[in-house]
Length: 206
Length: 206
Image (cartoon, rainbow over all chains, first blue to last red; front, side):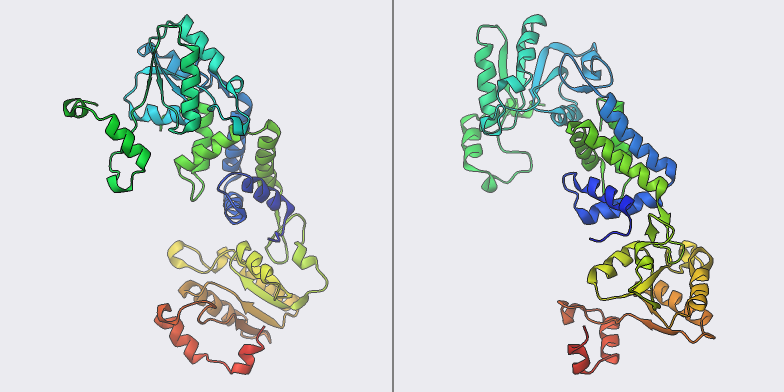
């Protein structure tokens, strides 16, 4: 693509570095910005800069935050003894939007994946074991991706905490609501049969 | 969506104002930016600001430009007497990418559309008629969208230039390459039959 201005070209190139944005979409976005008021465009640019420079991570759970402690850790109404362990911030947002969990979180920052060069030391595992001890956490609920890496991570952390009284659970796996049985993979189907549950518990599960 | 940080929320809201970007995509982009180096994020923000503040419009053709005259108008090898009239900058980029046109352009900035409140005065028509006169333009090729608004604009400008010797043409309309005859609309099909062309011209057309 041959662009008539190097200023435009810079914006197109920078936008196109973002995932899911190709050169054509980048050009469309840049031309939309060109038509907007200067104040609006500055607001976007400043918001991006401010976020990157000033955002902090909650020193307790690793969630992003404007402050030393994140909004969730600050809430006094939450059960401090119940901690949900997640991979990243998006998982926190997803679980929060269900409004079904009233404990705290712990953001690992990923899962153990030797092929990608991610070992336990790159993750917030040290701070988790410390937290279990200091806050006398009663239950850790693992909400990690259902794959080998996730399972490895659960196994690793469980072993580390074997000598503590903490109860370790994982979110239920099975056929999703609205899912078609015939399209479910064999492993999920097999597990959901093995972990079958009484109907009264299923009905009152929420 | 309940976000844990107002800094993040600002970026998500600003991104979501862009067309084709919803809240979920905006969040994904914001979290990608959070993981990038500060220098990279600043490069994006600065590119956006610089573009909006410093971009200029070619005083001859209305194309965007880093300078008083755009790169196309500066090229001495182009036929100055052949001018292609387009709606916007994207059309210039599209035609330039065909590498089949070696005249200059004139960007109207839109088409006449009374329903949207766009009259001839909001478009760069004054400068076009002046240019036809001053540069003794021999041919104006209209490459506007094939709809009522585009046709109205062509008609309006043709009338204004009726007393000048300039030849007025429009790009060919018909069935697109790769298009299926049976799916073409009636108007396009009827026009393409009315404007049928000798096969030798079609073959040598490029």
